[in-house]
Length: 270
Image (cartoon, rainbow, N blue to C red; front, side, top):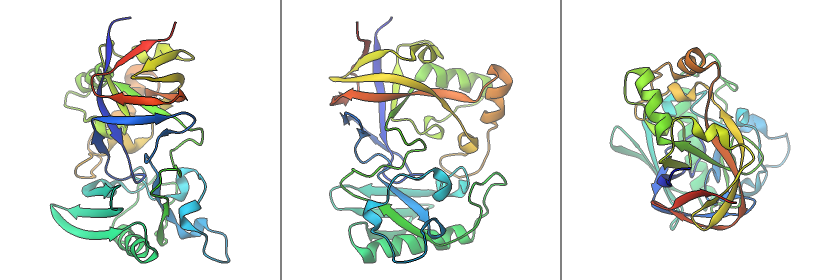
């Protein structure tokens, strides 16, 4: 296997919102990247009637309970920046700050929930939306990074090769932005789609160890422009047309904790 290196690293502090590109991360055994999808915007009709729960401790739920770009594409038009040091979430629309609020206080969380409730009330869901009703939203999750709301309950990281992305750009006849796929790690030095041959294999990634566990089945969210929120590229149908499936990238479990940084190697464990 040729020399494979880490090209990009991403974390997604709030599920369905703007990714954060970083130059290094710590991979935690049995968890992944702490802080990745640590928050989510949950519809209040996902809560059983009775007392309001402790929002910091909401357990994992399937994504139909949350406001995500697959259902509400125009969430992508918001530039959302979360500062883990301060717990402040800043939201901009067309370069103008429309929200700045704390995530560590009840008042701040209420402001965030109210903002996104109002925002989705004036936009349209997709026809395939799992949760098309515009019920109020609450910010759930904890700034410690212990909570996690990925699409799949088993903890994991997601990996995509640059060559696969380049191949999709060639097929689409235009640049395909990696943010459409919301990976944690982009790798270089491997041929297109080669990562699909790694199921069940262990790798050294930086000084962590991972086990590749599954291919990633995609939804229509990959058709959403990550800057405008418009569904402007038929990637979902192109995958099915050219490859007979709608999969890109792979999932991996962290089996030994460690650091990973841009330029680090990904190598098969012998």
